[in-house]
Length: 216
Image (cartoon, rainbow, N blue to C red; front, side):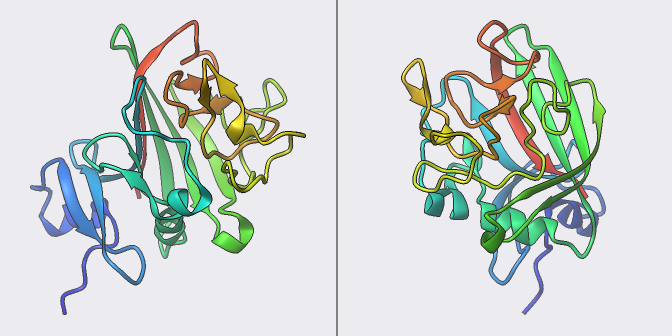
């Protein structure tokens, strides 16, 4: 059987750079998965997309975050298990963030390298150096919230550094959703009424949508 590309970048390379944005079968681990590939951006594998008033609920369990939910063409989470399979290599990966506010201003950021550890480590997040036009909301400890090196927390599995479960804490009636919380967050892209990224996206400065992807 022909081996599928392990990510969108490899898919772009096998097409000699001709592939278009869209849904593709990739295989970062033992079995194929469906992912949205941002080919125009250079073959990025999109693993999260959220719109401010998303119809997709991000208030999900550990098992749902593990294997993903939503529609890959719209708002979704690809799955922590696949993120681990993807970022463990052999090559190094980067984490790309794209934030778009109400006036269509786009902010970008990249962390290089980017790794999600395995489930026994609670899908701990490991990030390298940041560059971009967005604020570094994950590795800079600006307000005593550091997301780098944190374990993943969901409403049914509390791995955060707060006395309550951050994934359950509500803002305007919507819980935080699964995330690499500290105590609790300087950024959270999985709460669907407010996309939060420090000063770039907040309840004062509403963002329309955000997505995360992994370029090689």
